[in-house]
Image (cartoon, rainbow, N blue to C red):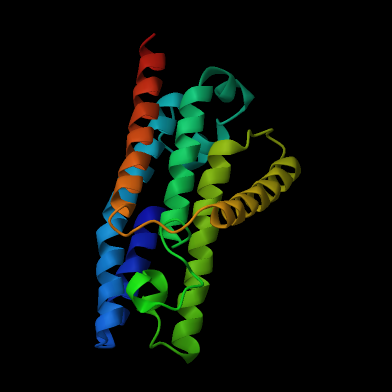
Length: 209
């Protein structure tokens, strides 16, 4: 439900970009629609791998069972899921190496070019939605990384520290990497899906053994 709500927000952002009649915004909307299905494959496969590893179909219980015992048994699969989710976070939030949020060249933009002709409350809501989206995907990464203790003050503190670590990791990635050519972006997203599939295969093998 959460992922499809995010997809619904993307749908309306694309519609608003096309409604402006700008060729540049239409180009950005086309790129957004092209890359989005590739990220969804990685996310759903990664969640399926966590489901197999933890034995839970509920998102709450799934992340609650990511504890030290899980990392002791599924460390390889856990690392693959984390890398896959982090690549998806960078792609979904238009960060380097997929997109450069600070660029001013319309031909190289994805997200930013879709909001060039928006101002006032419309632009504020789009930017606020983008911030919530970054928080949601950051929580997705932290939930798969941080073990649970069962005590909510400790888990809350660990969650905040995890989000800070994700923010730092995102900044480091943007500092040490250059933006990929747009033709290379699908290859990166397919690689994230492959990592998630490998994690799923490891989880199935571990469950059967």
